Structures are given as structure tokens and as C-alpha cells.
Image (cartoon, protein in one colour):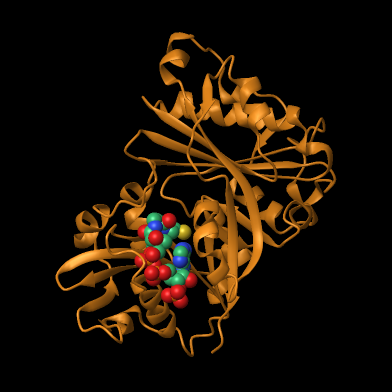
Length: 340
Ligand SMILES: CC(C)(COP(=O)(O)OP(=O)(O)OC[C@H]1O[C@@H](n2cnc3c(N)ncnc32)[C@H](O)[C@@H]1OP(=O)(O)O)[C@@H](O)C(=O)NCCC(=O)NCCS
């Protein structure tokens, strides 16, 4: 396995450029780089997991003494895929090719390590800006529609809501053991036909070695739910679920400048993608957000096979929310073969 220390040298072509592994001491300088996420950036909360979490290394990009960039790499899929994320370059330094040079320099350090693929998640804005170039090398292997909604927490607090997530009938929250069984089952194959799942903005192949990333890989605890479109799943083991009509959702969250961003990643088979079923899951996650996290301000982000404006609007009488003008409406997973 290549050492991340191997990346500690100047990039070719520029004496002043340096890319090296990030430490906790770099956090303050890295967080000064604004990625233009409208206050919803995850890095302040997730810096430790992006730089030191399982399989993860962060890299700082420096010009002279100044930190001008950052990205994180996570080795997943049993060491076969390197996922880059959290990338950002200080405004004023963008477009000079440093990000491209720095990532390539780090990829080089994996020669001889058994690495087969390099993957990233690209939002629609970056896909528009960089897609022509990136798609010459990478293939689009998975994509999800997405949207962000502001939640009116003041109105919810005043409404004296007495319901809890436990009151939601027909939805089963999986234990860790059940989560793994579901991923490895026939039902799992049907829920994730492309063999991949996007969870909290990172892509993973459906394989046992990824269970620790998929189920527990975030900065905060995730909640994984399934429902069976009318079938009670509570007494069934996931290995026995009928693969036909299932809705899977995973709720993750991070703190940001605004308050909390709560992310719901959803996958469905058969009639379980109905508005009614989807709304039940969204409501469960709303109740977790309201009763467990109790944020003063919150954004709700949904990732599904289609946009969910109608479902979110239907819920807004009890959970007042408005679609925000956050520009990211689609997330695409790009992957390229890494030739050793
Ligand atoms: C995206 C961003 C980091 C690119 O920085 P930049 O200085 O414009 O980058 P470069 O001039 O090096 O051009 C981009 C190069 O990186 C490559 N690249 C790799 N991953 C990329 C990614 N996630 N987004 C864009 N380009 C990426 C491009 O193919 C291009 O390669 P090339 O050098 O072979 O042409 C910068 O625009 C930024 O900070 N944006 C705001 C935050 C953001 O959107 N981050 C991306 C998270 S997915």
C-alpha cells in the first residue's frame, strides 16, 4: 500500500506548489476556503472524518506558505476504489490547474497498491463546468436527483407536535445486523441494481467490506429504515424480504453555519416509490430531526430517483418547509479505471 506521505513534494512545473497530508492543525486554514455552498458546507463538522476517518486522508494544497486548497481521499471497496471528496480551491486561485495537478500527484502514490478505480461525486454545477473534460476520462456510473428545503423550525416548535418517530407505523428501523443482512440479500440487489449506493454524498459498492462505511461511516449516527408498501416487515429478517416492493432510506446529518443539514438518501423497488410511501419515510426523518436533534435552524436534503417537491409540499402543513434556491439538483457518481 502506498503511503500518503509520498505525496509530500512539490508539483511539477511550479516551485511554490505543495500538496501534503492534512493535519488537525490545518483545519482553521482549510475552513477559510469557501466552497460556495451557501453556509451549508459540511467540512467544519466532518473535517476529522474526512482527514482521519477509516480509509481517509485529507490533503492540503499550498502555494508558498498559504493554504489554497484541500481535498480528501477515502479508500473503499476493499481497497479497490479511491473516492475523492471535499475538494475546494480558494477563490482567486481557481482555474490554474493546481487542483488537477494535486489530485493526479496523490493518485500516483497508489501505484502498485492494487487500486483499480478512482471515483468522485459531481454536482450538476460542476458537471456543467467540468463535465466535458472529466467525461473524457471518467464514466457516469450512478446519479440521484436532489434538492434542499429550509425547515421552519420556529413554526414547528410553536405547533406543539406530540408525534414521535416511534409512532410511525409500517416503518422498520434496522439494527446494525439487519442493515448488513439487507445489503447482502436479494432485496439489496434489487434496491441497488447498479451495485452502488450513494450515502451522505459518497458512493460505495454494495459489498460486505463497505458495511462499515455505509452503515457507520458518517461523522454522526445514521438511521436506516425500510418499509414494505403495506407489508409489515417488523417480524421478518431482511434476508427473507420480498425484493418486490421496498423503500430504503438512510438519514444522516451534519452541523454547518446555518444550523443542521439533514440528508435523506432513498432507494425504492416496485410500487414502494409511491408518494404515500416516500412521505412516510420523510416524516420519520422529520420527526428524528425535530425531536432528537432539536436544531434552531435546519435544512432538509433529499436524494432520490426523482425530485420530491410534491411530497415535501404535502408534508409542509405539519412540517413547514420551502424549497431553497440551493443550486445543486443532481448528484452524479463519476468513476475511472486506474491503470497500475
Ligand atoms: C472544483 C474546484 C476545486 C476546481 O478547482 P480549479 O482550481 O478550478 O481546478 P483546476 O484548474 O485544477 O481544474 C480542474 C481539474 O481538476 C479535475 N477535477 C478532478 N476532480 C474534480 C472535481 N470534483 N471538480 C472539478 N474538477 C475536478 C478536472 O478534470 C481538471 O483536470 P485537468 O487539470 O486535467 O484539466 C474549484 O472550482 C472549487 O473550489 N469549487 C467550489 C467547491 C466545489 O465545487 N468542489 C467540488 C466538490 S465535488
